[in-house]
Length: 115
Image: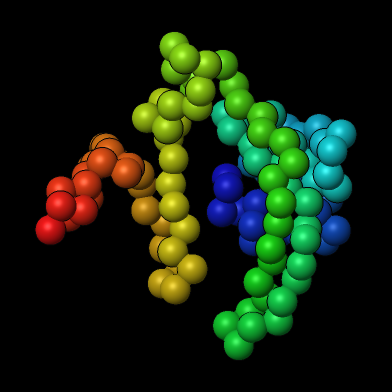
């Protein structure tokens, strides 16, 4: 569904959400919909748009984070392991599933500080 949402403009396809079975409400903070079925939403404000040789680069500022309780850890923070997350490769136009933890930030490379 997410890929389809990126392929089709609501300005051209009136039943975009009906085709996917997803539901949206208007964000109260930005000019974009919030998709109710998504467990995590980063609401962003456009800061700058830059024309690049490969396309348009959009720089944004996160102004709000919406997270379903089911993806929160016991500490109340977002637990990425509880989300069926994927990454988009802008170079090859592929999606990659996020897997298991492969290291601890600001710790795994610490032994190199002693060299």
